[in-house]
Length: 235
Image 1 (cartoon, rainbow, N blue to C red):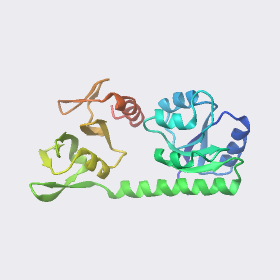
Image 2 (image 1 turned 90 degrees about the horizontal axis):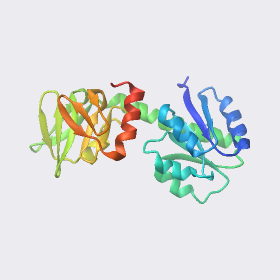
Image 3 (image 1 turned 30 degrees about the vertical axis):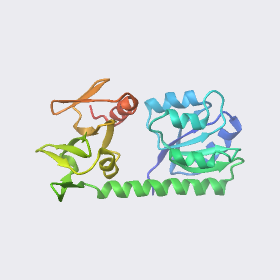
């Protein structure tokens, strides 16, 4: 049986809550943990809680669903629910996995849930397989064990990879390296730095400390870093 996933509903229409909550209760793989009626309520909840899936309405007062996705740097996987289809194309730019048009019928709901679990299974397989990263150093490719990697630092068209044993100058960029690292364990904290979350020894508003190295935290990454450290109990 698949692992139970925590989900929330964010919609200003009580009728939509009734339908979605009923559908969710019929799926034992899903657990409804929160129901919000506007974007502010959703933001407050997501700051303090880990969520796997969000059912999000687009047309809401004050903060629309699309605006909410733009504001939250790292949001749960999202299935949009709306009576309008004009935002369908734009929504996929924010990692939305499906787009349900109201009225939502149960078979279409189940199809969206299957798509969600398919993406979860792919992520799980990738995280099981990846335990090292291959980089080019001095013209040769070498594998660096991920549990040895402390942090990576931009250095022009190269990247300095700091490990427990030594530092390597690799022919890569932090952007290219980031794509090869498992998202669960590593995070960009600044335009020039990627860190191993479990190697962080101290965390402040503007910096983190890893092996006596003080690394800057960019303003756009502060909230996500705080949330991830809190959720994962790295500190």
